[in-house]
Image (tube, rainbow, N blue to C red; front, side):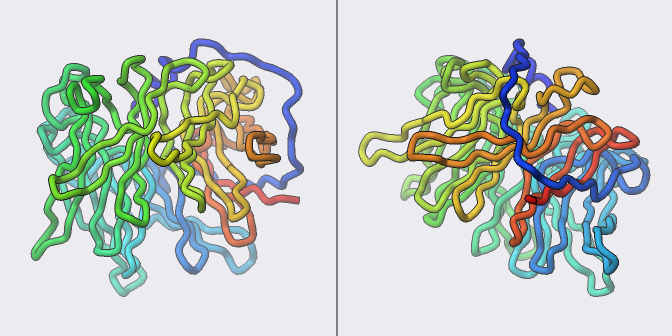
Length: 418
């Protein structure tokens, strides 16, 4: 919902440069949304279950409120889409965004960015649960409605779950007055199951005075959790340069405390982080910025812990138009440490203003050098504005495009290495 404004702030320069390396891949469109009962404009990335089924969200359908869908392998090859739930708007929720997450019992959890309480225009957003009903269907339960005050507003990035079944997430706005944004600069929250329902605890409210008086705001991307229970995320705006930052929240005897890992400076180090952070097996954190970098078209960066000295941020790729522009989505890592991701624009296709987006791979050639490869350039007919990718056990990549396809309301695709 807010990506367009971030994109415009991030970059006013679009460059088309030659020399982009392309890997041989097979690209397959698995499904093209129609904007009817199947939904349209799928949001965020998909997730797998243990049987190889994919689950995702669309923001709009025939009633315009969004769906939860499943993609299942077909006996004759390919995959079939099944709509698990259709949102009804109003108190039921509007426009699900962010990735879904499973608990150990097979229940799905997610968020709607609007709907629920009418204390906000179009609703302040909800958190929901989908549970198998034993008859090959699903039962939807709304477990929390945001109220737009100190508890937050617009949870656009989904939730993450811990071993005890607690959910953690962020709201883009709300949290109480702040100097940057009237509804509030956003929150990080926890939802804990209790007898008869759930209870919300706000772990952090962003705004002036909360991070060295620099006024960070608008948490972007999802919250991730490490093995020690610390939470990590990004804020799209704020800081001394106004270009956002990456943070850690740690729990202690006095509650939760925030540590700033890196404040982006709007220059060569990037600007406006958007995608969800990802850990590798050695404690490094990878992320993307939609602007900044050498060509002002966004970056992929890695944060490295330095014991006693904080964190070091290093750019491993600068986008430059032909190889992508504005990587809104986060990245995916394989077991070998290769990085996979997408950009919302760029690639050079003339079918979309500023390009229809790309899927890419980054491979480490040394401790300080990475090789970029284009996996696919989108051309509108096969999709536009791809979101984050997910890997299966065979190394195949699956993803969605928000727009494009025959009806220009999005697709589901697969990229298979040759």
